[in-house]
Image 1 (cartoon, rainbow, N blue to C red):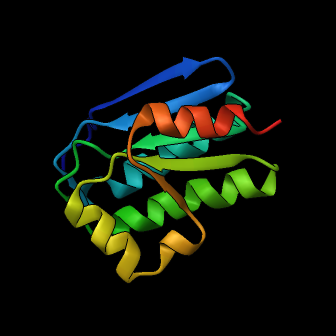
Image 2 (tube, helix red, strand yellow):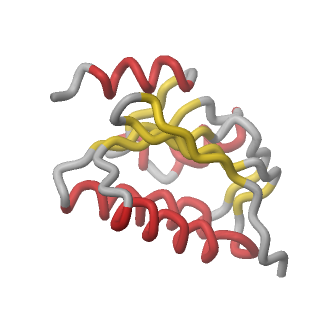
Image 3 (cartoon, rainbow, N blue to C red):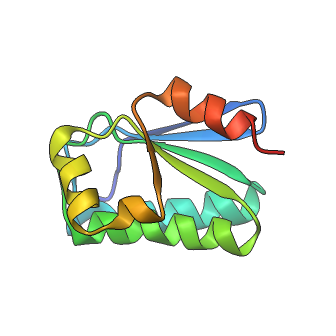
Length: 120
């Protein structure tokens, strides 16, 4: 298990953009990502989060579980989350699991940021 996950976190105004620079978002890294989400969302007082999925070629239920953890943390503090730029495989998985009913998917990070900017 690789203990170093490759991700970037940047702020655009009051919006945090989390980009996972990994090809696989599965059980091997999902625990670490959950830990990062927990730290970021609790200690940095993040209320608006964009998760950039553009690099991920494969995602399994563990990866979706990490995304849902971020969603639940934000929901409990009246925060908002957007998924941005999912690859075809990842978007299909989200749709099959019907998570697109609760998670807003945007085509680009810019689209996700603009969507969150409209929320007061």
